[in-house]
Image 1 (cartoon, rainbow over the protein chains, first blue to last red):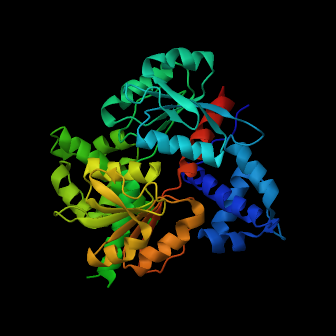
Image 2 (tube, rainbow over the protein chains, first blue to last red):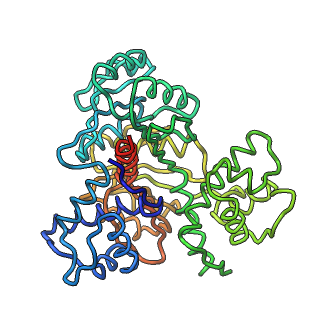
Length: 214
Length: 214
């Protein structure tokens, strides 16, 4: 089934809506208006209504949106929920690899870490959340035998492309990349990169702006 | 001096331009056109020209932009470069805290980690890049004595707001937050949060979309 494509700008807002709606749900809020959401999230109410119409075709709702219904629509669009689990491997068992393994383990967000791999013999054999770090050379066989969906790249810039190629060959459908490099991957594999420096530089931009305004 | 405010959308593109321009510089490219940049970055050439005019008032340049000049303008806008260093402390010496400390240390991006703090006695006294982890109770005095500019929050959701309050009281001008929570801080302190789940959910969105298109 073909889902209509929505713009990159909206896609980036979907997880943000989800985050705030789940917060509301935790606080036992069942209905919320676009004006209330606007006050919490900071997007305009009209933007929110427009976005919701685009992804959920909910129409204008005089008495507010049902939080549960919106969350279900969002989960569906984001490929989450319905007990769906992505089999995930982490490549690189250094600090960032361990931090990300802990993160996905602790927050239980639909990505199940089933294997961790590293090339460093000092790290192979160590444990992270009861998963034993394996040698990277075993990754291919492991991925094929365990139908791995997602690979998380936590190696340095120099090795990241080779690891990405290996993951693609092993049949993953998505790559979450923490190396500061733009990876080249086939168009039928999803890629999302976390560029920590971008975020840090937005912080320094904001600090500079506050400084200039003094 | 008051710098004119530019839109959030452009602000988010500035670090991306910087990243690609530095890559070009590493490859000894000295001039680049908006069309060439468009092919690398993926934004339209007209968007790129518009953005550059907004932040740098460089005007239209028939023979392309000078990479060095653009980088200087970008660094200036982003509050980077010119040997500027932000004294930075990391709160939370778990995996994510250590990963972020390593990252800023390794990539040398203007944020100098001068202190790491944790409340866990098992971590106090351990080392990370030759910095000894101190008890969180010592953070106030340390921050005042060492004119700390930036605090990086790497603690869990439950403790993040208390740590943010402590950092604000200690006089930091910027907070880089990795806890999955929206912090409340005064308007004269800059805040940038990294929501890893947002990025992961954009990945699952893309995987879902590719799946639906099959």
